Length: 173
Ligand SMILES: Cc1cc2nc3c(=O)[nH]c(=O)nc-3n(C[C@H](O)[C@H](O)[C@H](O)COP(=O)(O)O)c2cc1C
Image 1 (cartoon, helix red, strand yellow):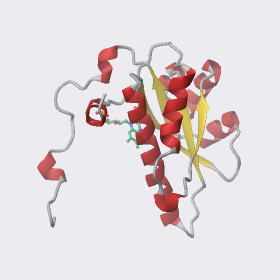
Image 2 (cartoon, rainbow, N blue to C red; image 1 turned 30 degrees about the vertical axis):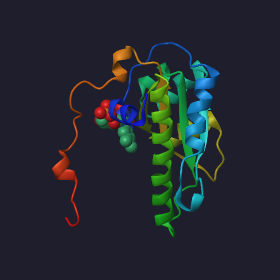
Image 3 (cartoon, rainbow, N blue to C red; image 1 turned 90 degrees about the vertical axis):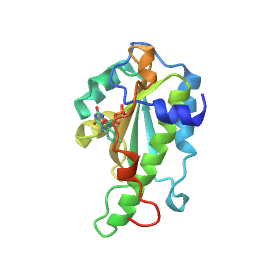
Image 4 (tube, rainbow, N blue to C red; image 1 turned 90 degrees about the horizontal axis):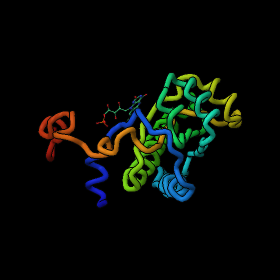
C-alpha cells in the first residue's frame, strides 16, 4: 500500500473482530509512533500499550468506548500535564501527540489494521488502571484491531470533509 492510499482510505473504525494482533504488528505500530517528529524533538509522549482483554474492558470505561473493549491493542498516550504558566508548551505537546497518533494509524492501515481515536475523559479511571506517574497525563487513546469487515479499510465514495476550495487559501485568505 502506498502512502496516499493509506491516507485516503483510513476511516475511523469503531467495531473490531475478536482477533489478537501479532506481536510484530503491534511493535510496528508502536515504532511508527516512536519515530514521529515533534517540536524541538522533545518527544513528549509515552505509549501504554494495552492488549490484555480484561484490562481493555476496564479501560473502555475511561471514555465509554465499546470499541476499546473489542480492540486487539489500545495505546494510551501520555504527556506532561498542563502547566498554567506555559500553556503553549501543552498546545505543542498535543500537536506532537497528534502526529505520533497519525503515524501509528497509517502504519496500522498499511498492515490491514483499523484504528479509532478517543479522548480519555476519565483520567482517574485510566490512571488507576494503568498506573502512570503523577507527572503524566493521558489525553488520547487509539484502539487498533482487525475491523469487523475488511471493506471498512477502504473508503467508499468521497470523504465527508469540507470542500477543497473552502479549506485551502492560496497565497492569502
Ligand atoms: C482528535 C480526535 C478525537 C476523536 N475522538 C473520537 C471519539 O471520542 N469517539 C469516536 O468514536 N471517534 C472519535 N474520533 C473520530 C472522528 O470522529 C472521525 O475521524 C471523523 O468523524 C471522520 O470519520 P472518518 O475518519 O471515518 O472519515 C476522533 C478523531 C480525532 C481526530
